[in-house]
Image (cartoon, rainbow over the protein chains, first blue to last red):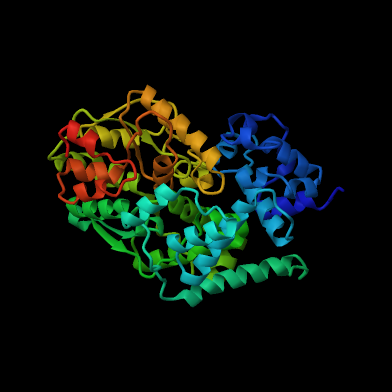
Length: 186
Length: 287
């Protein structure tokens, strides 16, 4: 299934012009996580050009991008590919598709939930909620215990006083997305 | 002259927890340098690597609220955390160059952007604005014999049109600071390679592979330690180093400044590390 609107949608959301890509592969050649990816950054760009939305949103690659910006810095057409990955993640979340790297999605959701609640990131909450939700309960136990005994993860969150102001930014940006999508989001 | 220097300070969330020794050493070092550091009133999380994965406008709006606070203070703001720096610098770049987004962000946050405030890295403030001469003048215990590689990672240097950092392929500022402290910076080709910090929890196998490569290359370059200015790199480099080889300590640059300045608190910072640097420092008679 080809989505003829996808290219324009990604261009707008990422502030890039993907038609400029002529597939020199420089991005994939220098990508530090290319070996963990299914396609690599240049094929991701090609799939956007071709409107292959379902394959893109189901790919591991959009969640494996470490946003290191190596590709964007080297791109001869100055395409910031990390922002394209961000735009694809955003669409995957908004459309509620089943993602290939559920742990990454859970991490981002918990992180942002914490920021909306406290105004700042609370690492104890983040680690605990992430472990429970992903069921990676025993992973990194040694480091976790060391961090706690060294007093590096405070139990109580550091709170922003004017949390309403921060929360308002969440609501307004979400409302704006729904509006731009014609109110079809949940 | 230095008593006239004042900066707004944005510590960021990591410096309140997993990188508490970074925060403590920044504050102590600025005090020793006699440069004013004023924590911003009621700052919020910049959204780090998650906001831009979820909602592009939110990823700009969160740091914009902080830029409004800094603007009100009238002081340039120093950000030790590379991720926070990158997010705020991205928002600042957008406010400066994209009129449409600017009016959206101004309306959301409720302020008028003037562009008078600069978002600065700790390395630029210490290495350029305060200056190496001043740094050198405070060194009481030179870090003689300490061989280290400077590690910048991604977010301080890329994308270059946003970070406006020195040469994105071959930055030198951290080496210059290390030299001023009497340490011996080693040359290597991986100073701006990614450590995979953003994947440390969600794809630990990839992060471990990337960290392993950096630790191996640092050792090959003859380094005993890696020096960084990013809390996400630091914890990832400590947590994901594995294998049979002895693990390499990962310092924050301000910890080394504090040690060379002979600051008493420095010993306490060392006890916060997951890979203890104490043996190395004692062997070199630095601690």
